[in-house]
Length: 141
Image (cartoon, rainbow, N blue to C red; front, side, top):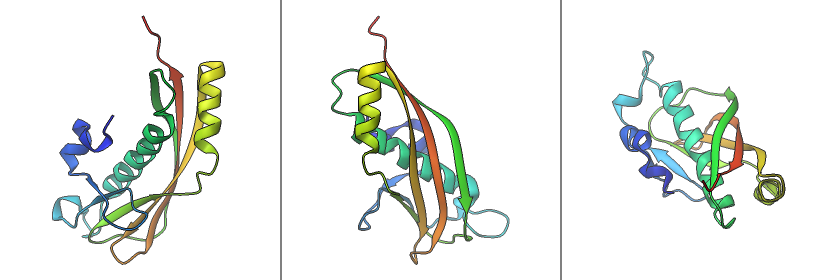
C-alpha cells in the first residue's frame, strides 16, 4: 500500500519528504492555513496520521498475510504554531514493529502506539503525537 496515494492524502497534497529523516511533508501553501495565518491543526494531524500509517506499512509488510489496521486513539500535543512547509518523522519506534508483528502472528491482532513528530521548515517541533492502531489479521474469506 502506498500511503501517499490514498485518496485523502492525494486530496491534501501529501508528499514524500526530501528532508533527512523525514517521512512526509506538506508544502507551504495558503490552503493549509487557519484564521491566524499559521498551519491549521487538521493539516498537521493529517500529516502525522499518514506518517504513523507509513510505519505500519513498513513494519507489517513482511507478515505474509493481510491485515486490517484502524486508528483507535490519538494523543497529540501541539507545541508551537507552524508556518510554511511542515514535515514529519517517526519518534522512538525501537522494537515496536517486531512486537506488533509477533502479536498479530500469534493472536491474530495487536495494538501499536506509534510516536510521530511534526516540524516546520525551520526545524521547530510543532506537534508530538502517538497514534494507537488496532491491527487484526484479515479473514481470508
